[in-house]
Length: 213
Image (tube, rainbow, N blue to C red; front, side, top):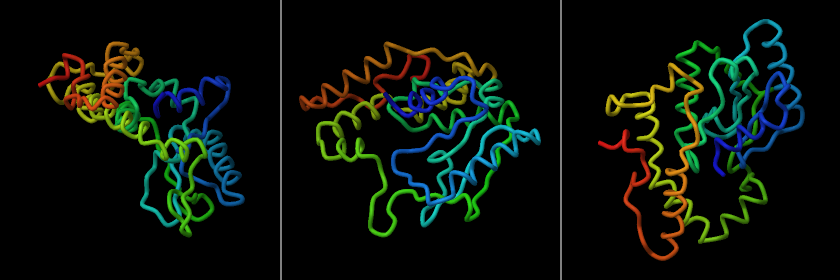
């Protein structure tokens, strides 16, 4: 269903929560780190510094959206993730742009007490069993690549903020403006199915008309 759907589903499952922790499939938490993260986020909520919270990584480049916390205060100001970014990539850029536009504070804590494992550590890959099964399937990888390319999320993100054609959706000024584009989604799914038949879709074939140069 995509990265954005996954993050939103976490929020939907506990709508009354003061904050939510969202993690990618390939992270693991050393003992005590989850408790440290919870204590930090709760403290910042009490002191009024509530928004986005990013944490450090062990033996990996810093990738803030692989493990982050978002507060109810932030969601109230900037909305949830746009699920038209499918299956993944660039949705974090768009969400972060909205946060910056609406002056939602971001807390970054990279120190040891907050560091998690991401990707390869000690010659072991840390990821969910579901993803491990998917990666063994050539069919899944082929479809994912086709849906990703036909959707061209990077161009879609630029279009949303009006930076590409001047005819964008301007989602930064109205964080709740997006709604699921069923035509775009079905186009991407069709591209994925066609890829299994050896039919390659054009890059960006599923972009809305307003986003095409």
